[in-house]
Image 1 (tube, rainbow, N blue to C red):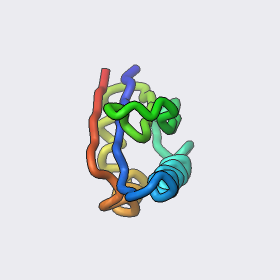
Image 2 (cartoon, helix red, strand yellow; image 1 turned 180 degrees about the vertical axis):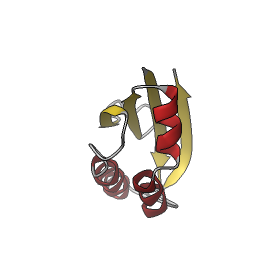
Image 3 (spheres, rainbow, N blue to C red; image 1 turned 90 degrees about the horizontal axis):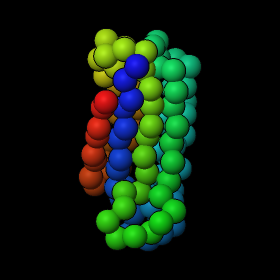
Length: 97
C-alpha cells in the first residue's frame, strides 16, 4: 500500500473566500471517489488549528501499489480535477510513503 498526502494553501483574501476555495477543492476531489482504479481511500480535511504555519486543506489517499499511484497521476479524472482547480492553490506539499 502507498499513502499519498497532499497539502495546499488556497487563494482567498478573506476567511470566507478561503472557505469557498476549500469547498470547491473538496467537491472536486470527492467527485473522483470510486473512479480511480487502485485507490482504496480518499479523505479531504480542512485545517481547524488556524496557526500561521498550517496548510488550509489536506488530501489523504491510499493506493494498492506504487503502480496504482503512478496511474492516478495521468488518469483522466485526476487530470480533469487538476484543470478544474487550476489557479486555486498558492502552495502545495506532498508526501508519498
